[in-house]
Image (tube, rainbow, N blue to C red; front, side, top):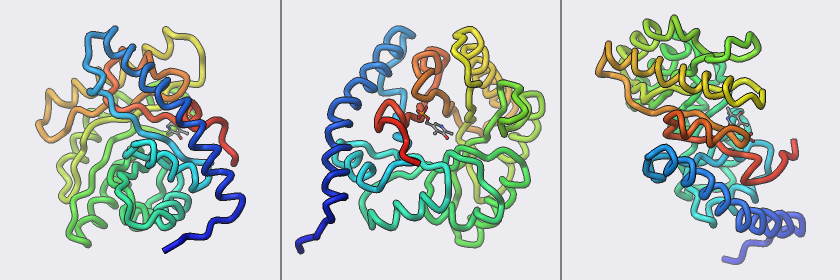
Length: 245
Ligand SMILES: *Cc1c(COP(=O)(O)O)cnc(C)c1O
């Protein structure tokens, strides 16, 4: 069946296709180089392409370019894009702050929720997953920068809180996520990422129920994150350009 595309869709499709042809090899190269420098296998770092703020044509272009892990930070935008794509094989990541009332809708689409920042939210996710007979996969978000504007568990409290999250039924804590402070100072960024890794190590020494994923690193700090042990980088701007909204 021929699908009729509007002029704008064709234009966006071509634009994002060109951008990715140029940007994706660069991003993969940045990841690989940082991994090799740190004595790690490039394949040990998963690339989550953050499509928020870009139209659905960007998502289609990403899939055509071979990207499989896509991230959104708002439930409505996540639903909108997932609906437009239909049943194409995508692993959706919910990376933004999630309110408890949005949990059922988020879990309909997202296969991994990176941003579980309170025990109450984890409890809600556990309950909703249980109601649909599924197991939710989550990461616990930790505030490693001490910035009041950032959500996330306090690193000191994470030990106990994440331990309790991991005990909940219908939910698997696969690791931790953090957002670094918005600064250029490499020492500050390194310290934040190192704090996340150290927090995970402490948690894992107390429970076997928590996985080893470290979701950290964005466009401006991915090399530092990979050096400090990131297993998942969340990249938007370096792949798709400046966001449109
Ligand atoms: C927007 C966003 C990203 C991607 O940021 P870029 O700087 O564009 O790579 C990563 N993680 C989260 C949680 C985001 O909201």
